[in-house]
Image 1 (cartoon, rainbow, N blue to C red):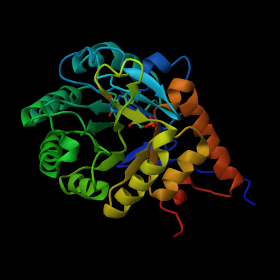
Image 2: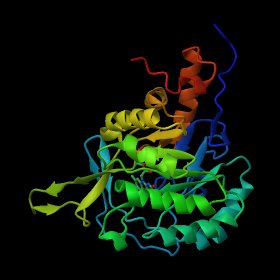
Image 3: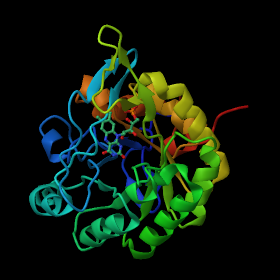
Image 4: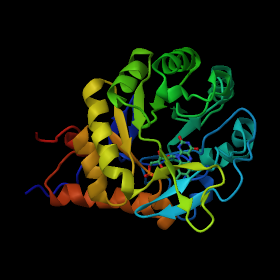
Length: 308
Ligand SMILES: Cc1cc2nc3c(=O)[nH]c(=O)nc-3n(C[C@H](O)[C@H](O)[C@H](O)COP(=O)(O)O)c2cc1C
């Protein structure tokens, strides 16, 4: 048995990560809020809360509820806006040597997204972009970029044209064929795809007969969605050659291993940080231990190792 420590680094679209475990968007603030709790230079990377061209207040409350084995949220992409992020948060992040920052971007139109990318392009301290392609597009009757192949193609093509950093496209799981959407993103120039975002869901208070979330529907995340997310990660990884980043319900190291075996190059951890703010770091450490105890010398060898 090898006594050497397992090699945990992975390359994600040219970005070197010291571990394949990444903190997911919307569950890790802008990173700086977690610096006392989680060593940002020990986890693989973290993804910022979604950034828009202007600050956004989000949806009315209640907008988060717990469900069996998960949670529903309709935060509504509340955020401080891209310019305040660059001015108030990024300088501190740059000081944390070794922290890998992935900026999550969204907009209601393609132009909105382009404006966010233009602002970020000139800022130092960001390793890559994650484009949230599952946000509503008001100019197209409330449809979302991530569920319409034509819109997704346009969004990715135009953002890729101007992005000065690797572009990872975050796909919506609310589609019939995730493989098809991953392929559309790849053909339009995406350097990686990440999946899944949350599943559209509805919870009803049976006493009042009203939705439990003010927005009526919310996005379901957490362990409840994990087997669906693993299946989708597998389908996406079969459909494309670019790296796939898998997520959905990861709460322990073995969950991360499942996603890697299904075909993911790296994974993200979201909801678990709500139950335990140290979850991302614990899973990072746990994954290394898992590799050591299973004679896995290089974590990257797990990717796509599912035996059928
Ligand atoms: C409260 C909350 C806020 C989120 N905000 C964002 C966001 O701003 N942008 C984004 O791309 N995904 C966002 N997500 C989705 C997560 O990044 C992740 O894709 C999803 O929750 C599935 O992973 P999990 O089961 O580990 O949470 C959010 C999720 C939660 C629970």
